[in-house]
Length: 378
Image 1 (cartoon, rainbow, N blue to C red):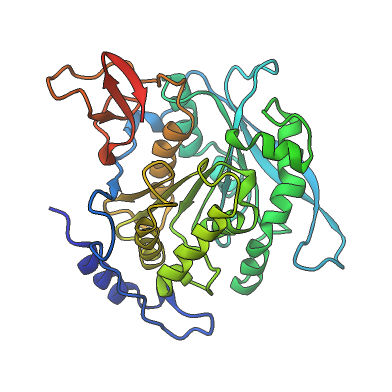
Image 2 (cartoon, rainbow, N blue to C red):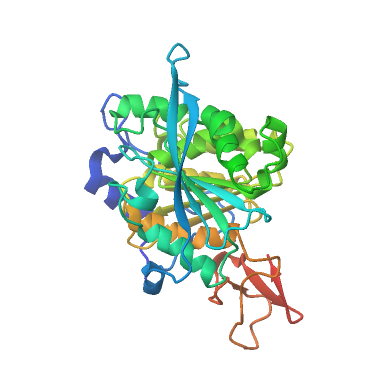
């Protein structure tokens, strides 16, 4: 039986002490958030299942990893010269320039570099995440997509915490001005022209996510450039609009700030946040408190726009990232409107129950439902 989140969070705070320290290094107590405090009774934390072991094996149909270099600049200081930056791009097996592809951008955490998600830190070998990409596509669990691993760091080098957080805070400008045009005009995507209008017109086919400081960067993009991407995958990190670790200390204010961003947009009913953290992650206070506060604001964050996921026993590591990506990609990029699901076990209770694209029961009521013998995405 799962422990209550309140008890578990208290244990995590004692174990990891300064995981949610203030910017001057002094410990601050995270807000006490109860799951039952004004959270809708039908809201459920969705626990992820492990990635099947065979998905970490090399697929017979393998995509390629390509390096794209593009011009950008140091957005923290306008006086600094332009820079040439790398982005590593996963191109699916059988890529066809006559077709259009969805794109997901995945941001690394603190001290990370652009190549590590796809080729490891040394840049010499394909990672488990790439094997997951290949197998998801080959097995028909999601449609072919392009994945991009850039860096929010101006030099693609590990930096101190202060400089890294400054660079992450302004990455949204590079994302819209430089990165999206460079990648999505090079490959066959839904971007018809590299202008703000063109990026907006293709937003339904664009996702961005990240882990740890990459999650915080994802929330900065949500805050500063919400309109330009439809899907968001923040993993183990919070929004800092109310201050560093604001999701932990000021969850209600943070959630309301994010809701205000959404509600001011013409796309307020056309977005999705797939939020995730491990139950033993050192960043759980920031993530969990913010997620539960967001769940209270049902006019904005509801079953059509928001879900919150946990990996049982998940820590602050790539094992959790790979598992979250495995599940989120199937949700973001189903094979077609009828989904990739092949079959479900026939039973009298099948109608009205939700299933994942591989036929497993899904929690939270979202997924593929069998209605009048037809497969419907809900």
